[in-house]
Image (cartoon, rainbow, N blue to C red):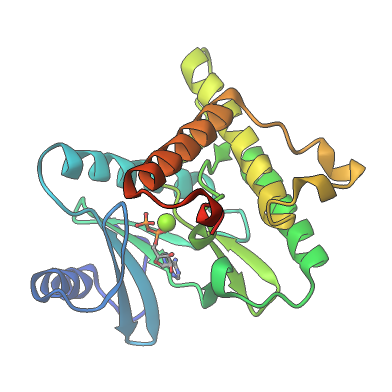
Length: 236
Ligand SMILES: Nc1ncnc2c1ncn2[C@@H]1O[C@H](COP(=O)(O)OP(=O)(O)O)[C@@H](O)[C@H]1O
Ligand SMILES: [Mg+2]
């Protein structure tokens, strides 16, 4: 059951998305979690995320979509995330379409202001009990009107559970650290030597990040070695 949509019924939207899936049309993005469809009509612009695939891959994507829905449900009061209308037909996540540009391609008018807003948004998220966990990906941050951040893609977010839940607590705290580390990485464009004292408190690389960085580097090196690239070009 969806939250009320102006001038549009669930049945109409379901018909539209089923036909879009069938004809492979209205696709805005083909991502890791599935396909993202853009609905435009009846004065509305909506995003519908649909998991794709069968078997284990399809199952994981469906679980991620449910997880994303749980995260959005906790964030209905937080400004800077799209409004979530619910899950349609048990498989399509329906979201407000944000009129923004992915951070990777955006022009920010005042970087200082933008990153201050982003830091406050991260803190607001954590206050609501959600850690995003995947902010290093520049596609998961949209820039609205060149100045306001908007976070999307809560597929791997950790939603804190009340009561005794040690594993959840551990993962939640880890994902919170990922969020702050990502903020520093994006703000300083990986130039960590430029971090000012005030921001140092937000940069605490976790063992998980160190190990994953080591693996990525080793993998890149191995690929280059296998390709037989001469050493002098390796930095390119
Ligand atoms: N609510 C939204 N408003 C506008 N664009 C969106 C929205 N949700 C997703 N998108 C677009 O679709 C892309 C993929 O969405 P995302 O949620 O990150 O899916 P994936 O899990 O496949 O990475 C985003 O990078 C963005 O360009
Ligand atoms: Mg994404």
